[in-house]
Image (cartoon, rainbow, N blue to C red; front, side, top):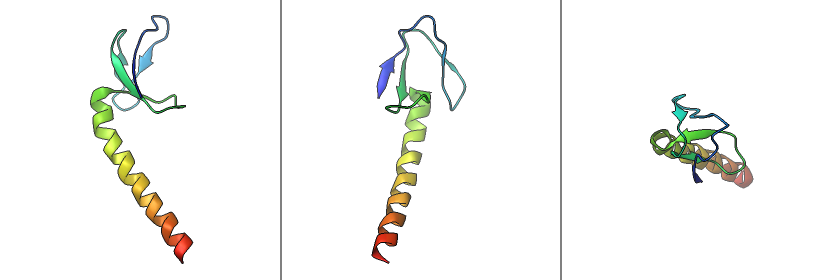
Amino acid sequence: MITKNTDPYKMKRCVACKKDIALGERYFAYPLSLQLMCLDCAEKEIPKTIESLQKDLEKVRQAKAG
């Protein structure tokens, strides 16, 4: 989910590069997660997450089949 930082009282920080997310800057967060990422880091990290989840799904399918 891509959101714009509109809260002037709460500091937001990217969990990957540790950069502060400025007021008015857009960032990525998974729904129901406190992990925020700047868009540059999200572009790098999301494909890694998808790959990991695909491997986990394959393991589940193998466990069900065997």
